[in-house]
Length: 180
Image (cartoon, rainbow, N blue to C red):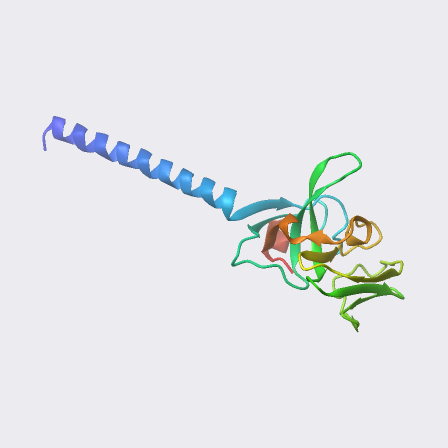
């Protein structure tokens, strides 16, 4: 092969690599803008399950990725008082059209006591009146009920406010795994 032919091959190879990198970059942008969401736990409202600073990747709320009981979700919560927009991580306890109640430090959905396996052991809850959720609402709680800003204070959450459902924790490394 002549020197000119070698240079042409090198040039084509270089251009091909650049095109491949651009395609990979565009695909990654698409995935992280429309399918996946990076999540960071802020505060202690999900202790003991998740600590302040834990990081994960969750699947955005899409038709094939529906919220369900006991799932961890990211909610877009806009604080009406100071108009700060914030993403909060919580756990679903009641789904659309369910009834929800807290009585004697126990959670009841549709009149039945719910196993509350993720709750911080020292968490105490005030009674919450029997509430029927609308067809587009869920009821969420933080695992650390003593400090959690959740549906007990902000009210039922509209389904359209759910930004992500299901995911994996990747930081800290000793917690790598599916969100529970």
